[in-house]
Image (cartoon, rainbow, N blue to C red; front, side, top):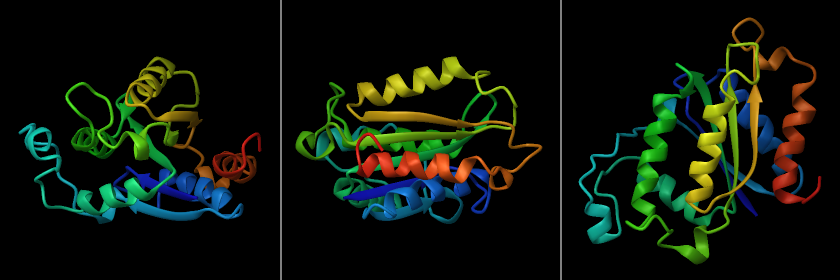
Length: 189
């Protein structure tokens, strides 16, 4: 099993990176091969809306997303981590999500149905606000969007209050996050 993580934060050593790493660590402890990409140290441009991917089956933007497409094609699961900025995913997460369009037909069903339909997904959000339900409407919307893209959304993990207390300082989080990662490999874990 292969699990790919994408840290959609400009801070390569921030809360979101730590959360995604812990989830991947849990998967790895149960035998998964893991790979992580961080938007803070790759070249990733926004979708141009040119629809070349609809005509050719391939995104024409020559950046690191081409490598990520290859990694996702081989993956059984994706862990998408994003900080919450202005009540929603970061610009980096939105750019990544928009670029997934190149893998989706105009009818919004996966082109590589055998490879992508039902791919497991964990959404992991970090937020400075201490109320984990503050942005619940957005989390529900995002989960539904990925379900429409035929991902099997396993969980939406929200780590709140990270402005005043970094995630890595919370004793309750490592075991919780590792269990999320292990559940991708071992069902009912």
